[in-house]
Image 1: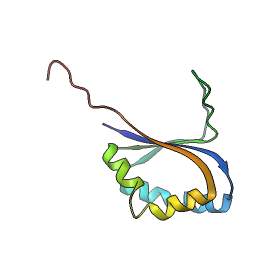
Image 2: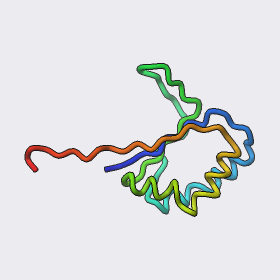
Image 3: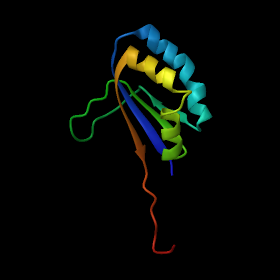
Image 4: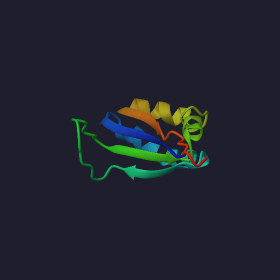
Length: 103
């Protein structure tokens, strides 16, 4: 079941560092089977009061791959760079495995 890393870039403090992050992150995401599905763009709040600033969503094959990417030695220096460059909210989202009565 796919899993998603959802980021909301709330406040950029160092645009140059964030550009360095952007330049290096794609190959690392792809190495763990990830692909970007949202980078900014249009959004609409349907319920509640969440108001994303600049949402980014990455799809991974499963939660194990998403966790492996986020905690990997390959991603660590990029994550540290992103932490210096911006204030970001981030979550991993995974779908539970469902069973049916036919199984």
